[in-house]
Image 1: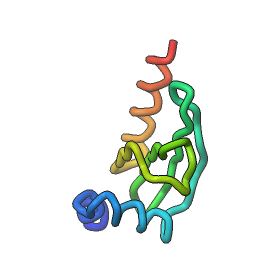
Image 2: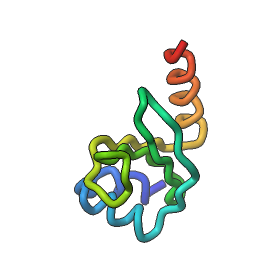
Image 3: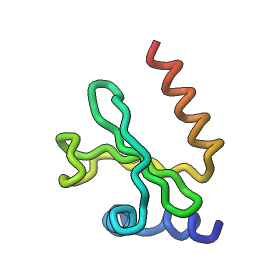
Length: 83
């Protein structure tokens, strides 16, 4: 849990560098015609949207979830909002 607290206070540049080095990409999904990438790093889940939908580009948005339950709640809310 201490890692999650510390990760949130990293600069965004450091968060992305850590994700690229230590995170596991779980998959992608489409959101409003954009590709969103989901990573797992230790006990956190991180959703990232990159410029031009390319992992090689700069990020546009980064969302951190403390637990699988928090991630599931977010995804359910997103799913309901899409209809």
